[in-house]
Image (cartoon, rainbow, N blue to C red; front, side, top):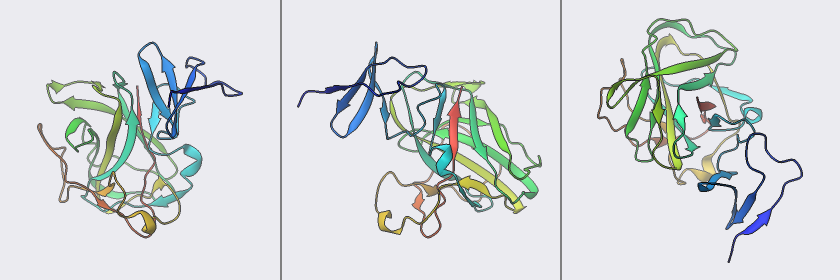
Length: 219
């Protein structure tokens, strides 16, 4: 079946106004071909921001496990320059932090970029955090440029006596435990960001209260 051209009532700001229906997805058509799939990445209205879930869906909160890397999938286009990793807190602050950092991973959980370790920096309630990229495989760098369009993972690791609550999706996912890509707890007993090369452990799908954190890759 050939792609079907669709024109939304309100074209998305910052993108070309040509949309292509291919299979079950709606894609933006630009000079590079089919780009961002609408639906697989919910945040497309603001260029330069690609998030795990839309902001309106981050109405719940969950605390990650101290010293454990938590991973969530995010769709990124090829050639996107990642400069920061964003997350937000809910109504529980972190207490006595010892290590805290975030990372970007490819679809096979290979580490692509990490932020600096914020060590004992405060993690307040109801706050948006934007941590800058600090290191990639080739060494110190404030950015990482993606090499393919598709699923990546964003990860966050905090070690503290009291873990902060992070903004997350709501509800439970028990019916979908076997679905891929897996997200949730990955590397354990973490302190400082791992060196390169490093492949994070395949996550264990979360159950019960959803721990699908709102995380975003931005310029």
